[in-house]
Image (cartoon, rainbow, N blue to C red):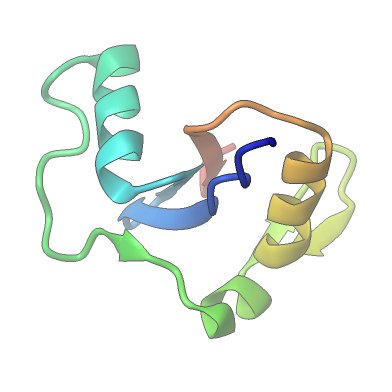
Length: 92
């Protein structure tokens, strides 16, 4: 019997970056592993995005195509990508 897939959510890390993973703690830990302990300091504004934000926020691909955050997350999960991962940033 296979294990159910973990719920993957998108988390606001700061005012310019979002990560996707099983929990905020997992996203912060991976972010710090990648860029150092000073990255993603504890912030009361770090949080899981709700359904409204997932439909409102827009992901813009390198080719200019646009998707909602919800559509982009579904695409990455269907592609079998590994989480946690950086999801979006305003300066990309």
